[in-house]
Length: 350
Image 1: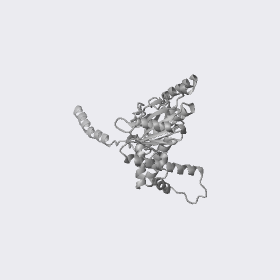
Image 2: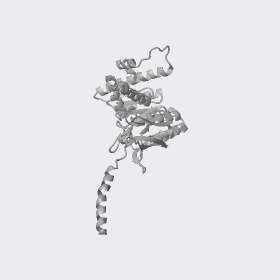
Image 3: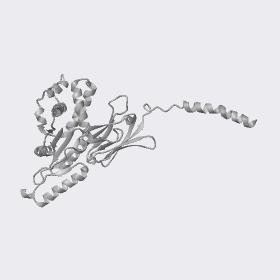
Image 4: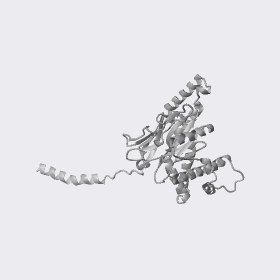
């Protein structure tokens, strides 16, 4: 499934066109087409508030999020049932939608893990966080829009989306009467965005046409090495997991555009047996969970350090999870050797 969105409403047509060029054989739907899907009612009935005389703004927003999550799940079901690829045109922020879907799935796993609805939500959440869903986003060549798309790409990468690319459109053209100064400024903004997002493809429209983007992009979080800890966010950005001399561990992750976000880092445990099962990265209000492997689940997070587009989280072993080795074996060996030494000493004296 390929998601297509735009920073501004006027860019929705460009987003759909860019997605169609990336996957010419795809079936195209709009997320809003699923507003009356039975799954939306099923989701809404799962969350009810009784005894309330009025609905607050926060509750109204929460219910709207639940509805959009249900619509995304309905679109995901349709995409899975089809042989040909599916493009879903999304109005609004894709990272916010994906973050809400993953959070709601985590909630359902705790409260109703055995229900069919919870299992379907988990399947979609795993696909989103596992890099099985691609995303194309369109932005106009305006500074405020460039800042917004930088944050959204950082959020999407942290959530695990495969960022197919960013399309900058429409570019001001000479034939449309735009002065040379404006056209040079727009091209300069595109170059700045390319520097910000480094390995994420950033292309601009030319001659009023959308560029062709690759149909399979590198996933946002990609396992490398033996375990899920060795992560990379974006096609070539490296992330590493290493050990310190004091026996602690460090997990580092690089996210394109991170330094342009308001960042908070914490831990979250889905299993009470462990101090933490996930690192939680909150980027401008959007939360992403990065799953830890079995080693770090048995450790306690000490601190997180931000440097440019990288996060380094240090861990120390949890004594309750890593009991000290018993010393009985060494003591018994020493006791066994003692009689032989005493015999040798007596023989020398004789």
